[in-house]
Amino acid sequence: MERLAALASLAVRHAGAYTDLILSDIDATRAVLHRRVVAGTIVIGASVLAVALACVWIIALAWDTAARVWVIAALLLLFMAVAAAAWWWLKHLRSSEPAMLAQTAREWAKDRQLLEELLARERVSSP
Image (cartoon, rainbow, N blue to C red; front, side, top):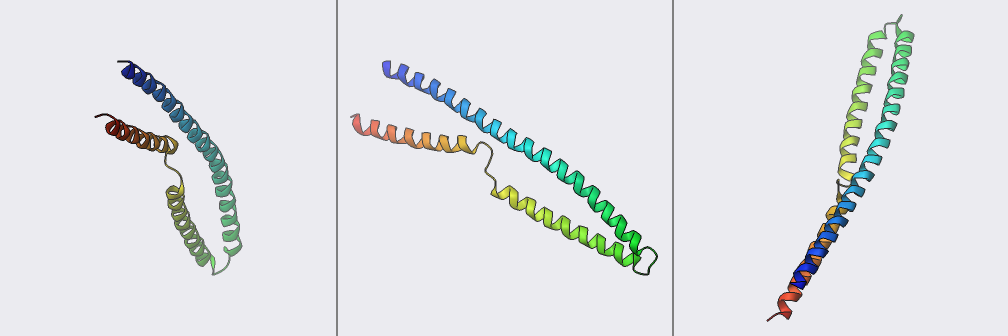
């Protein structure tokens, strides 16, 4: 009975530690995500405005020439290429980032291995 009480106490403390670890993972993820959203919003807003103004300027320079249609087509192809490169980069970023709750999963794996070792020792020591 004493071993069961000790085991229950250990399990409760362990569950509390896991709760703290999960909350830490969530806080770290939230902070990173917030910084990325703010920086990304500023970069996207400024970039869209700069690109739009540059396009208007280039089209205005070519407006009274025969190259007007070619300039617009070249700008379209340029933006399609940039969009394709950005899509590829986004897919690359997703695959290289750690999974959500990665720390918790690593700790669970360590605990599972430790528990298996303890149970194996218990089986060997008890007749």
